[in-house]
Image 1: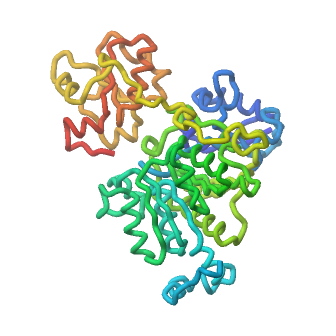
Image 2 (image 1 turned 90 degrees about the vertical axis):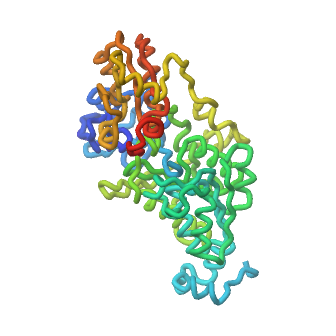
Image 3 (image 1 turned 45 degrees about the vertical axis):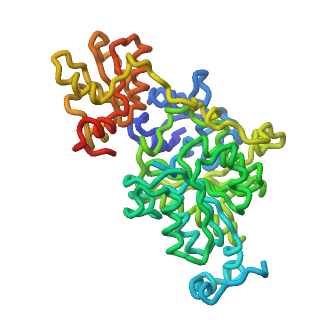
Length: 94
Length: 384
């Protein structure tokens, strides 16, 4: 299944500067493994020491949070878009 | 509601609202009777304050402890060159009262804390989160949930923004439902480290202002349960679904957080700056002298290439951006004396810790970074 992953600005430097990446994966877990294999530097920003998705990084398939689907077992279909949405805090003082 | 009336001057001022049936006299009176507390009078707070004052929101509270700096004016449009050095709350108040003398503005020149947050927020109908750091965002969220007030949220980074309305009162999710825990310090760059396109907070702050006006007048469909994402470079808006987490520690079915906590500690920020022992630090003046001597140290820059294009310390031997340091540590010679620098000394402090862990002993952090170098050694260097 060819799936498009959108990479947020804050993480693009760890993904070869790409705003989106196309990968083959049948579920979200496989997609994460494929992505980290392709861009090892992205690994520590997405996963904790136990290899679990970090709690300040959310993944969405389409417009739905994987926490309310089947988590990493959420199946992917051809043409799906997966978004990585990390917490960002900017806005106020310099 | 009936006791709030509009003077003839106000009717003339707000006529473009009054002739729209969705707002009309009733909506304009609700705006006049309404109150909003802006946490932060910076990038997001600037357009928010300007549009809410112009729209005739009757009472605007401003919380900020900072003073206007020249580097703010690239995006913080409520301030001006004439108020550089003035408290941001006072600077904003002057501009807003000039824009609309018919509204009340209350300033709080203080940092919002667990001790004062509930008292600051209690008198206001709507709270707006326009801060720049995780501890204040979690504090604002929790206080809004505890008080049952809507929290109009916006956040920006470089070319990207997020906005939503958290309103537990209306059955919507809160910030902790979205992100149960903050990133550890250092993993996510701040705007000071990462930069921000000046017009970006204008877009996100204006979206927040729109939501405040909708909440106060009761018109339209609020941005509750939806996270709006904006990418300025691709010029795309997207929307994601947000859901309330029934096991959320603050707004869930069985909350475990029932009062405000220590948010600095929650976000993993130590109460004091990590101190390096003197052996591992050096001041800009000491470095300047050392660089003149034959035994001069190896000078390592751990900033990013686009920062080097702005300014560098003359005699820099090598550039390795901090995030590449773990993989490129073998390019460095641990036998040689080395000084590491960055913009302010924070990233180079982390680099020195990393090098010490890898067995380097002759390594020093330039305290205060290139900013202090510009202050103490070479005032001709631009500061950024």
